[in-house]
Length: 296
Ligand code: NAD
Image (tube, rainbow, N blue to C red; front, side, top):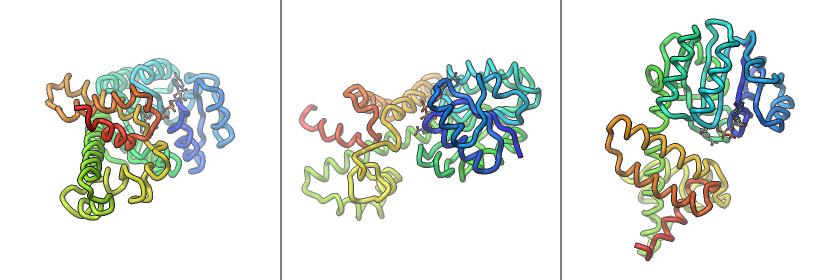
């Protein structure tokens, strides 16, 4: 049995920690929010009074936090309380630069570290079917894999420090762009008098096929798993898509990569968010696309 400290028990971290308990691990949990701590306790975790207290004597530390600044703040605190050689895994989605700084901090204090952002959303977190995209050296990845397998079903080693975050933002840039492309195609089909079903039947088996169409279709009634069937309740909220597209743009600027469609997708999702739809599933962007007609 492994003793695991889990810090950050929100929409994702809460169910992930619960799955570690279900898999038979001892979990010492901490979050700043009392309601999240109480939920973790009823899920079978032991509670700690601070992040530093949670990591004392554990084999592995997992963090699942909002952004790079939170991860660096927590890692700066916990590395002082962890035993040398402890493995620390960050599953948050953060900027590549902060991820690299976190790895450097861990190395400086003699810890093994992995950045392991996830895809699969809150449904995947609950069902333990997440995909983990991992960055770090071979030894740290090998140690992290059995822990991550208890919370997910695909664990991919993407490369060295920060490579998991790089894979995550590249993937989500494809997702943001492709969801807008699929939404534009349906909006055009509607104007042309082509039925949703006809477009779906053709594009889902032709060269327009993509995940945004066949697994997450932005119009209701075509794909059982689509949030469109559930009034666009997330799923994956548009505000989180803005976050990931912004991370991609920041990384593109810093690395000197040209990503014009990624930039445009960021602008479109930002406008949707600014109109008060940040809590709507990101496939709800089809409403924004339809509303653009006549504005240009
Ligand atoms: P959330 O806001 O629900 O949870 C974050 C938790 O971190 C909160 O409970 C907060 O209280 C806690 N926290 C913040 N600072 C802390 C500190 N110093 N010490 C202890 N706890 C602290 O967010 P979430 O939806 O669980 O997402 C977590 C991460 O996963 C984010 O980086 C997000 O981008 C990423 N992510 C989310 C989804 C999703 O669908 N929600 C999908 C993939 C990736």
